[in-house]
Length: 414
Ligand code: NAD
Image 1 (cartoon, rainbow, N blue to C red):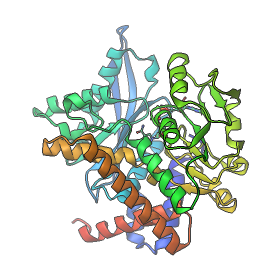
Image 2 (image 1 turned 180 degrees about the vertical axis):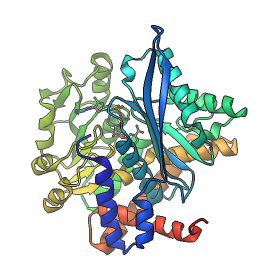
Image 3 (image 1 turned 90 degrees about the horizontal axis):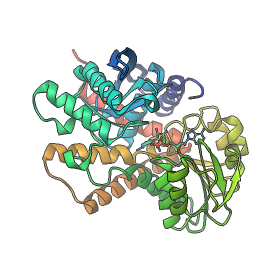
């Protein structure tokens, strides 16, 4: 991640505090994570050695509900990044109106170098180490970078074994067979599509026929390319860690997905021209979706973009220094804490179903996702108009106002 992610969060929080005239006591509370747990995660490796990994679980705020947020396994994870991502979850859940606080967790490791057994032992030991924080009413983890339903199943099993009772509401993103929800896998991409549609409609831009550029072709970018093109957009360029492809007439996302499944990258796809991954930013288009890395759009990239709209599928893809450049260049940015909230919204549905012991059908999940994403977009859009600021500043302002209301209502203990 480029820059200091925690400093970037504070910068945006401070701006929202000024914009909303936030009570300085509440401002100080939100500038400090409620709790940061750092743990050693010793794992017996397949060759008999014991490797000691470092892990974290951070609760940023839990005023509005149990802490909620993903767990990532990555070699770059550190405490400040985890804290920044936890704060992002606090703001995201407030914007969509979910009864959750914000959390994040991570283990510094390279999961591509772990065997399946090592990955399972690492997950179970990390779960044990952070278990004092976990539980359906305390903290509910979900998948994030390099973690998936299988990891969530081990996490739920470990916690259930430790507590001596089945705890399906203690984790989301579980496989369907153990209480996962329908629609979880595609919920983030669907939410990004809904946010894009709402933005194009509010800006009175035609959706059909518009050109989209996507950075990242993973769990979010892959399905999103398909959804945007099924909805009538032309996805003209896609990049991933291995390269980029460009076709001004529109790429075929299904054929591209087949190619990427075999080749491990979009590079080399014969349905378009190979271009330098960095050159996707200069392509003339109506929509850019960063769906890969934090810090991808910095000041230099912001100067090069030839788009009307950015919808942030990734977390933190735009650096604070790039924000004023985009504003000056009149590029409308739908911020991450709104645009990619479809995933945590589906997690909320899963948590509710696990607690009810009653599974919803696809139609109900899709209908409720649509209405919650649309309401959140309209609330942020409305706030941006009244405050006369960007959608990002308005989103933070809205989140901070909702948090301030909840914090004031509960008061300070003791
Ligand atoms: P993923 O690991 O499945 O995919 C990441 C993609 O980014 C891959 O295609 C990878 O090749 C590409 N990439 C990596 N480095 C790149 C580079 N230098 N240039 C271009 N592409 C590069 O991850 P994901 O789950 O799709 O998540 C993508 C982003 O969306 C992350 O920021 C994540 O935090 C955010 N997000 C994901 C979800 C979700 O439900 N998965 C929810 C909210 C936010």
